[in-house]
Length: 221
Image 1 (cartoon, rainbow, N blue to C red):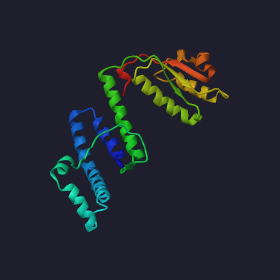
Image 2 (tube, rainbow, N blue to C red; image 1 turned 45 degrees about the vertical axis):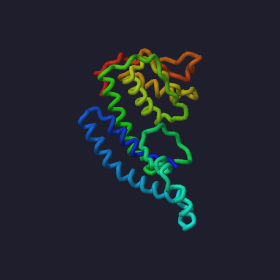
Image 3 (tube, rainbow, N blue to C red; image 1 turned 45 degrees about the horizontal axis):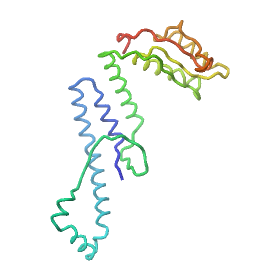
Image 4 (cartoon, rainbow, N blue to C red; image 1 turned 180 degrees about the vertical axis):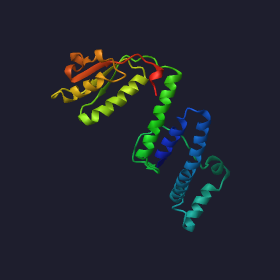
């Protein structure tokens, strides 16, 4: 069974995203010290489980003798070694994983905050190449929910130098459309005169499009 360290992984990313080199080194060193006891505990448990599995037939004298006769030769001892691999690998959930430190909402929020900070830092160092258009689909969200979502979407688009956005909200009785367009009219990243419905083949009245103001690192905070 594969052992996966969720919170530890996000903790590493949080430390690694620190822009300042010296502070980054300190954070990674602190991360190593905090992570080691968790990993060590998992290693001990995994080692005990593994040994119990491979030695389950050796607790009798007969079983032990048979296994010793197999092990006790130079070829076997030179060919088989106990391995421990610690790697950051692409993750896909399955039933053969043992999650020893589940990710918490607090850790996720902390890592996302660190990622946002480093994205801004990189954008200030090297302004991103323009992106023609980016869209977001708000179907299934209430009026109260869409404004914070749109705000985060626009800030991310501006940081990435997106030139035009398409916000898909559906038609219905146009409650979402009205709320979104009123919000866009006064937003610092939007050219209010550019707000319009999308082309018919892109949603028509069920989607709103607008141009962003020219990118400037001074607006990033």
